[in-house]
Image (cartoon, rainbow over all chains, first blue to last red; front, side):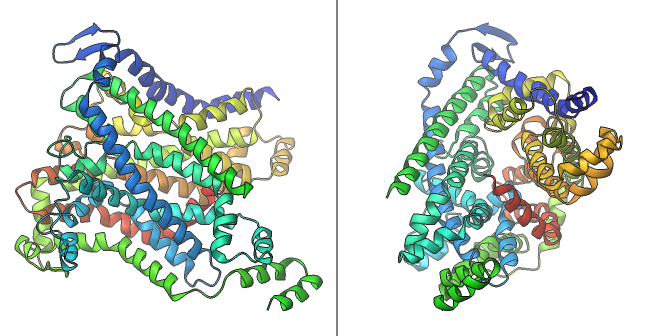
Length: 297
Length: 298
């Protein structure tokens, strides 16, 4: 290791670390500190209150409601997303498919577009009185659904926006990993008389274990940060008339901007992080377990 | 069919083997598969089309039953209305300033750091790259409040630099560039260059940069799109309409449009989305390969 090389390397990597310390680490550390204070900037006093913010958080019905909503939205978006993306990917990898690149490109379009604009459009499509979706459902004899006011329906509406955005992107990721599966595995499976469905179940799925784990973790971190969709769907930070689609990040943001309760907002942020860590650990353990059972069979 | 494949297999092992596998594993594309593709493709495009339908119609047409599904003739009126409610041109310019600065900075800083991590030897290299990957797991809202306070202390509230500076370099960019440089530049080439006495900045300029330009372009696109679509940070730090980015401007339209009509909101949304769609026509294929290249390691 020569000295010049060492010196230039330090220089080259320093921008990341300098920026991370200033805009990543310091805010996080300060956040932890802040969470022990009552601090509403309007009265410009900072009072140390120990764990009170966390106690309040624990008894805060809106925090728990937002947690439930976030998970419900995450559930309704993750399951269809994964299923549709896997389906798309297994079609896209068929060598007989024509215009593959064109299809792939089309499916990536939703991913690149403005979240707010998309949420505006879906908000209109999900309108109660004049929305196209209710109109189509009406043709099939379904009575008008109030997508904003009904808790479950509002979750489905927001989950639809997220699913729409991510299906194509995820299918490309799945496709890339599927292409990396060695052909011999399919060969021996089909020699053993496995049908295409069985090949999918016993070869493709276990081989995609790492990809699925990775996507679940990334998807969960993203899912727990859902903000633009519910904010735009409701048009404000309250997440519906009775908080029926308020999410964790929305609630955090509301504490900053609407209530200017900085100490409490910091505590909400820590709460969110703890939830993210727990869920990531569960995801990781579950996917490994399921996958190892698969390989045993 | 499989016997024919086996016969070829014994004589010429490599290329025909692949062919045989694919042929035996994949039957013809079923019509159902194409139906599925068409349905998803339709769903992918419909919201954009619908944006334009609503943006170009008058509110009574949208409210009728059954709703009109073809564009109307009112688009330019709605566009004019958008410019009356928000300073849309200014907002577009702000967005471009932020996106271009962020994209350029991320490409530069990520490529030098990626170069160091991929090809140079220095103390603590392994631990540091693991640390960088680890930071990607942290939810960004954790530091949201202090970030706001920090930006206020710096007097950056309501300034575009509050959006640009914290985004100059990301863990994702560094990691991506490391993968790219590691995969695309052979070590022998660099060794030869350093034996010839080329300095490290010189190697970066004359060997790394030309080789990674296509991948750097993809990273630049990703950063550009991410900052175009960012909503949380602009909403947090921007306050006056003249400083808004497009996302905040649309959300303002949306909030103000309560009790008004949807057409104007859709016209604004359409105008904020159209540039991306046009850009996508030119770079879509590269983004597809970019996403897939980045995926294999996942």
